Image: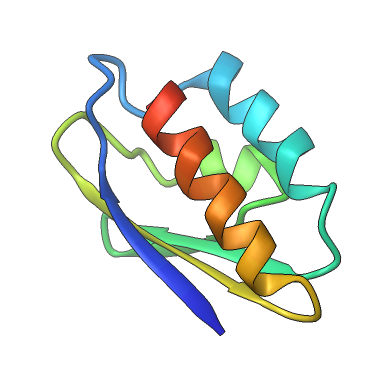
Length: 85
């Protein structure tokens, strides 16, 4: 299992457009990827679940990847979060 923490920098938090791109990124991997934050947890591959978390600027999220390509998935998503959130 690989995890990383990230504090959201985007003024709008995790919002629809980048969240939709994140879901597409998550689907490239075989690992189960979850996101935790704001007292909630969601499957990072499900857009409505991620949007329902209500993650705002300044909140910390924890992303966990577990599976055969977990290291690759965690590294790619960490870069994605830095570039988009």
